[in-house]
Length: 464
Image (cartoon, rainbow, N blue to C red; front, side):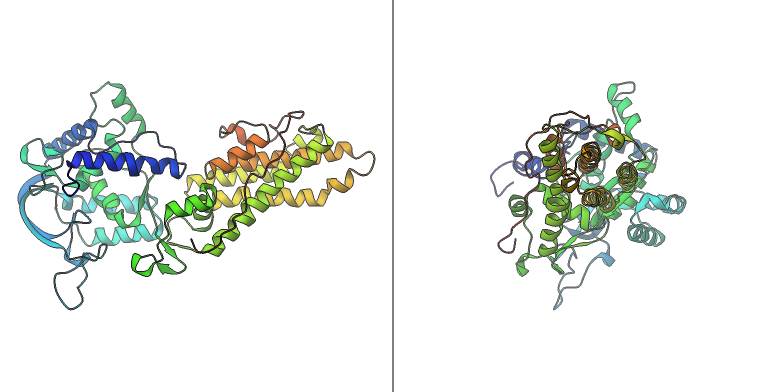
């Protein structure tokens, strides 16, 4: 901010408007609330929280000295650091630059008081930290014993002031983590709408975080909640990092994958599909351009897109531009009805367990089965013989209904592709789960628009 000749508030206001908010549209992500740590409701609730924790006896004043990484905004433990080549100050392993040794009088949070309680909680609820590798990391850290940690700073002027010490501001992590509850009404006046919303919403079913900040979310954060008498989130899930073609991405290697370029050239559907379909959530993943192209083209353009396009074309040609009569195809005993029911159950279970790969695979498999059924029934042959119109109509209805279910199951993963498919079936663009997952909702006689490709093939002319 100083280099830019503006105040810190002006600087972050600019970042929010120019960088962070536009990202939501870029990746087609919905969010219900965008709270900032400079928001008045956050500031007031943070101060109230720490007053409660202090009153409960978990905050005290002491001197602190230790290595501090400006980039991480974090005091480091000696075991966290790496040695510099040729000697010199130890380095932060995240930023690769020397840490600073700081000494100042701070207020400390009695983190050590919660070692046994957290170990006991996670032993009773191993599902509370996922995946398993994250759970093991957290338990190893806890069993090594927790030490009290500084929760304030006197050397920083811009921050949330402690209500009982005007010379100190809340250390950034002990401010930012509270966003999870300040956003939903913590600290609001009892009986207010905000307070009721907090009571209805917290604890969270799941919190998704990057694995590099797992310790903050699975150790410091639950200890803070316990110190204030609040329930813990049911699950913290730490996701992995991306490499590229088997190598860690870095500017010096010239292999950084620019997300804006990727999205501009390939579209949101393609990027979202590859990342959620091919990389097990929670593991590190490797971006491989050829596999990315192959999966998008084979799964979305060919298997799913062509299924809808060719079936809709036949239905329009033979049944007055409309959904054909259903006949026996509306029965739950129809093979595609049974396949759709299985896909719906698998998808909903996958979302609950955060298995996005399975959530993508289930509708894809339904599309594969529908393509197989269409090829076996061969309506283009059957329609040439007299007396087969009723059977052909039922077959086409079943495949169109399967395509509708594919689109509905894809909606959380690929909202744009799902919307295009549903529009082509003359259905609402946004399906209402779970009602929309029932079989037989496509109404015979509904006019079908002229088919358009719902997914273009990727044709990349060089490395991204």
